Image (tube, rainbow, N blue to C red; front, side):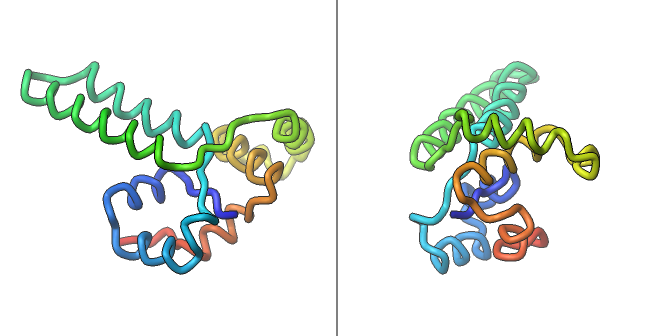
Length: 131
């Protein structure tokens, strides 16, 4: 199982060719994301809506929010469960992981708990250079 991060999910949503091609290669049934990524996507859309400068921007923000919600409904989203919480407790004790951001740590815990590939393996498969 490949757990896609926020950037990769955004590129998938926008139909970025490299990401869409990789999803087709590994099989959409092998793709999921986490509740953390869903929160990040929706948080950005909510902020845009709240900070809209005028009516046109407000309408655009609502359109993007609706579109993102629909996209996420079509995506398998894995939540925090007791296994992920246990992984979280283990990983928090590892000093080397102190440099990892909280969100990435949470995504990693969920991926580990559900037999997902490491972020490194996902990165190698989907790449970070999507330009």
